Length: 313
Image (cartoon, rainbow, N blue to C red; front, side, top):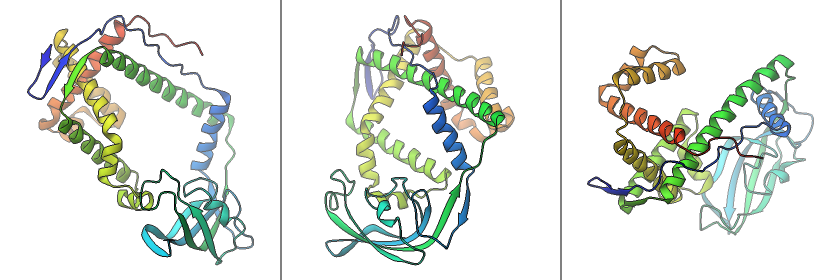
């Protein structure tokens, strides 16, 4: 049994695990979708003025939503670039813009889904006043064979990394299900809050506004925390069993191993090891060491698993 002031972990079996590693095979249909995404990323957008909106266009719109005759929070926007057919808006919204001309004002009638994030709108009909301000036609570039080959190789690496991560998750789930782990709810809520902040920081890094997202979806910090509670609990359970196994097996990180981990991370970011250390800061070296120890413990678990081979598809 491993005890801390906050948690209790009684480890179950963590050797000879039977979880199978998922296949990293790439199907032709899947690869076609990957190529399409690459084409979209480098697509050329040309403004058109001599025809109405059609499926696949980007319509730049102003919109204002009303439910029961009253405007509602997050229901309006200006200069919004909406890809017709993307399914980004409420079901039925985008289809009603097809055939609309530049400068035209359209009444869009929809019904919010029953599971919509804002309870005051879920399942209710709504009217959106929409103005078409610009129509852009999307032209996808042709990809040369050499480019396709490079894309496939990189995607294969991503698939392999994803399969490995999924395999590790399955192994951890097997250990967790065979262990006794006690975590107070207050710590799970705290972890869920940390995950919300991480998610918001990720959005900002991509140039997206979390506040805008909340307005469009009827979500909030509290609702996001509630949705993430199960993930937060699993993340804490995973850390705790990894820490318990590391203690039981006396798994540590040497100075040499720590330097090697830093060197590998520095290469991924295209900086020197000294620059990485400066960015991390001395106060976070311990956290970096802890992460390296967890990674080494995962390697130990995989080495002692019964089978890490790809499952039959």
